[in-house]
Length: 58
Image (cartoon, rainbow, N blue to C red; front, side, top):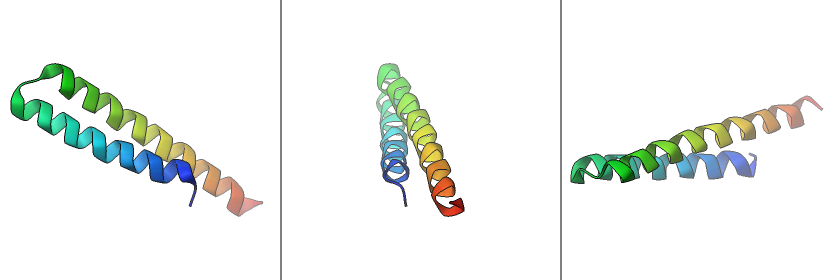
């Protein structure tokens, strides 16, 4: 498994927690940061998946 997939998954989880915490305490900045972290994690995870696919096909 590519390192990007692991890091992306962790960023996604961190973003979910941050977004939920921001909603719970009413901090819109923290909520927005969480959404950005979540999106960044999904993108990084996707890139890692593509790298894995390329390695398997060669």
